Length: 127
View 1 (tube, rainbow, N blue to C red):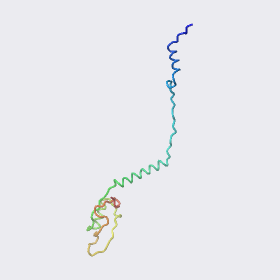
View 2 (cartoon, one colour; view 1 turned 120 degrees about the vertical axis):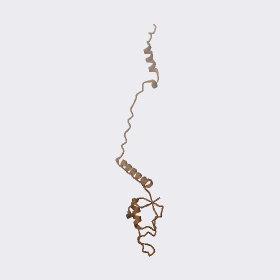
View 3 (spheres, helix red, strand yellow; view 1 turned 90 degrees about the vertical axis):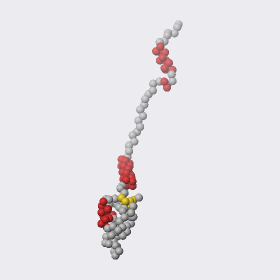
View 4 (cartoon, rainbow, N blue to C red; view 1 turned 30 degrees about the vertical axis):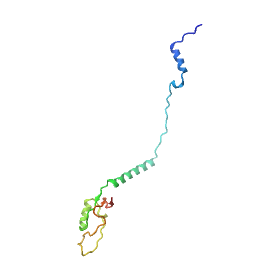
């Protein structure tokens, strides 16, 4: 007896079953990674370090630098006026008074920070 003819669809189905696994339908699996939680102490420490670094960079590079003038021969009042005009606190200016018959009263006869030095708003010498 002759074998019954198989229809086309059943022949395809039998071929699919013979193919390797790589041709079969894939299964998708979601990979769940555990969430890393950041310690609040580390975050606060990092933020504080960043703020300190920003402040340091400002004062090193961007803070106003004031050139010192030559005050020899001028009066102490002139130094006070110059300091106020440049925003320098006068309590940071140290003046030593010396009695001399060669100079007038309240006249500057020498200065520590020479003309051209840069100082900041506190009167501290800068580069």
